[in-house]
Length: 255
Image 1: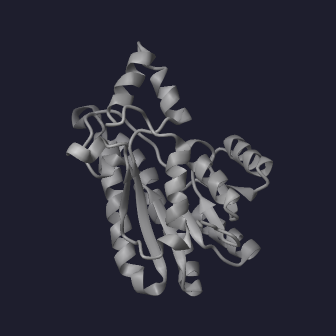
Image 2: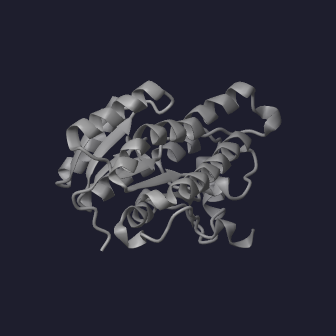
């Protein structure tokens, strides 16, 4: 079950955290993975980890805010592999602040990556998927795209937009062999989160506060999110499209 044998996948933001874990998980399941990231160093680290686990992958430099780079990446994948079966739009950034603490530039910056990034990459690869009459797109949204989170105005705004993009694309292409879903994680213990914790006066206290948001009292591990991505990428989930797959440790259970 949950095999991706002979599948070709593109994972954006795969240099660390959730994206890295998804790339490793997909490769273990048999997929050839294009590890996409702006940072060649972290991308190379993911490639090394995949190869260490006997998986097949390669790095592809990609800034998702650039339409030209997205088109170039799509061409490269098709030229080399002849197809693309799975796209994971994982690249994303965050911001802390209320509307009064958020500038227009802050909102534009998050929108460029979190929303336009999904739009750009998907628009670049979708025509090839339509030619194949099959394709599987998984967007990384957030629990902040389902419920509001204090002091995360720009982030929540963009993640709600990702959920909307997901549902719209799923409806538009449901009869053309394309499935589109999104994953909405709660807090996940990634290098990004670990770096942010160090900025607090009391990192341990901040960690406990973040962990307690989840009903089960801890943050998720990247591999737990990757496991859900594997299910959505597999043929076993063939009847699922347009869903916002919530993996939040019970955060939203009482909402």
